[in-house]
Length: 193
Image 1 (cartoon, rainbow, N blue to C red):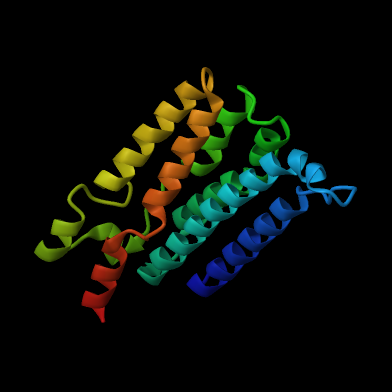
Image 2 (image 1 turned 180 degrees about the horizontal axis):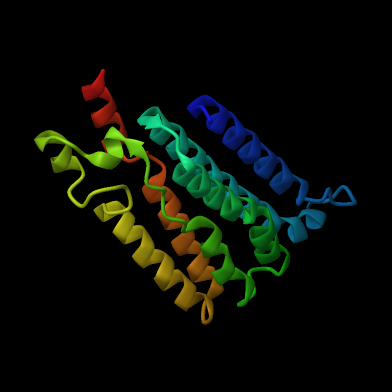
């Protein structure tokens, strides 16, 4: 399979995920502001979900600029990622419609805490002295940013059983950390050009 076909498939799945998420927001009946109150938690989960899926799409796009060869392992890892992202509308919708109850909130983290796949690329191999400076621990996922994110997710899951709203705030914090893609992508790709 070619890299462009895999990217097109992934883009299509992510577009469907985003579309399904917005369909979870039901149009309120009535004309005053009070009818919007029940929709607010669902809308907030939509916003956070949209940002997370957008971050994954953005990083997926950057990562595949560095991919030289698509093999079976890459296909399986990509499908694994898409499987968990496709659950995002369900778990975030559940969290929103339950008004951030204790049980649904920790499940939201599972959809968003997926490790990136290993790839056959300059980013994954981190060859050369300069690249090793930016890829100190090998493939993606071994960065300080990745470690902090996983620690926050673990804390958010534990805290969700006591304070679900604090847990949701921690999910937003992770999104803020990842709004800018991993700088290794840009640095390594500019060196290759």
